[in-house]
Image (cartoon, rainbow, N blue to C red):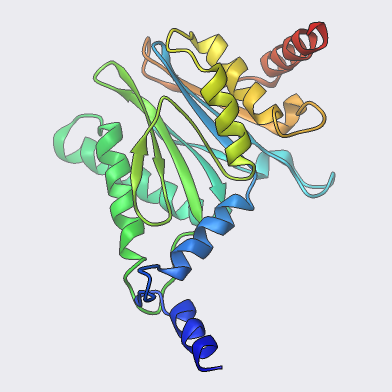
Length: 246
């Protein structure tokens, strides 16, 4: 009983390390991310693709109200997995940081600099009493000095740079698919197809076009733009045809 009560004490305190060096609340935040629908990021020489599985719980819900991909600045987009409200707070932080860079220096904020600002904020909530960690992981993609960049943020406040990455539910399956299929010479269209195919990988049936959000940030115009549903429908149909041929 004494050991169990000590375990519960470590479990409740965000600022207390367990004897084996773990912060249980941070690990619980990672579990919250795993329970969210997946998001995928793919970096290509022509830009970055962000895709998210936007499942809704009821046919009566307005699809436009379910936001998984956000515009942080003209040249930066963010995809999330986990608690939507936590993601919204971090996206708002990113937007304020980007606007501040424009006001102070008259230039676009760097993608890496912006990601580090987000993770610094996340990390503060892993050592603050009376608070909890952010139960969300983000994929931050954009163009910096003409080069595409893609980063992942973790509830611990750590950031990683990727060529292609997945966060959220079924991450291991989707990441395994990306590792097998990713090529460094992909163009944007091939990157979109790869991202959607990766989201399809854990599913028994193909993900419908209306259940997927996709956005791109290209090196050509360094601008965030969403992919129209009509284009997604044609890509999904093409993927289904290729799979049936196999």
